[in-house]
Length: 273
Image 1 (cartoon, rainbow, N blue to C red):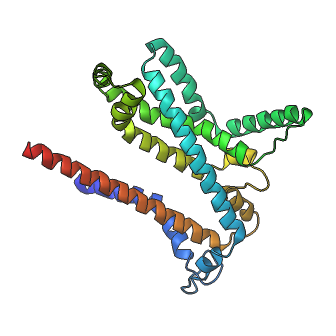
Image 2: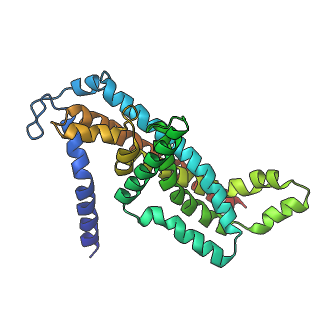
Image 3: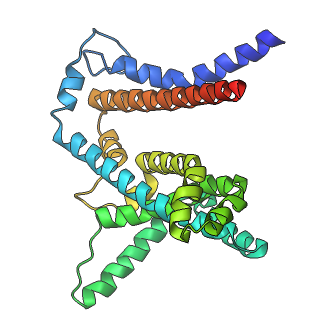
């Protein structure tokens, strides 16, 4: 049965990564054909770095993802700290509300945000205050749907932490704010980093919500790629997709390597003790 389980795993891996492999393979194709490989070339990667539309869309995506992830991480961490000290029934109510952006279809959230921003645009326009769809609306929307992921990553770390360590720091004369940054924050930092990475990834990948709340000058990369699919997809899209995949893969490998190395060091220190 061992060979069957290994075969099953390899079939699943092949099913998941074969399309990405095909995409990377055809990013080096000389022609625009998506079925015939006519020869190896790096021209599409060269053209990619001269395509202002794709590069600007990528920059927009990175700016929105980074800013919204940082804001969501700060707010989500503060919310997780507050939730951890609440009574059980209050925490249960707020957690159910927190789950809503996750379980709701993205199309519902996207349309809701669009209607909200249109209403705000109309109300602010009456008092001569400008409000346009753009970076601001994108960041607000992304912060909203990223918040639950940060809270759900930080809250378990808050539960695992020994609360008496924080109280001991206060008893020893440490101010509450300093005690939080010196005692609590290092303990929950793995959860904060996980929440930030999840928020950044979801924001980078989002299409549906961004499609409804973006402006003409703030289109993200998924929206730009979608607009290109109405015609014929350029191999430049294959090239940028391959680059993004390789970068994400390298980041994951570095994070896993760092975690494994840290675990080996802690085991070694524990063995010496």
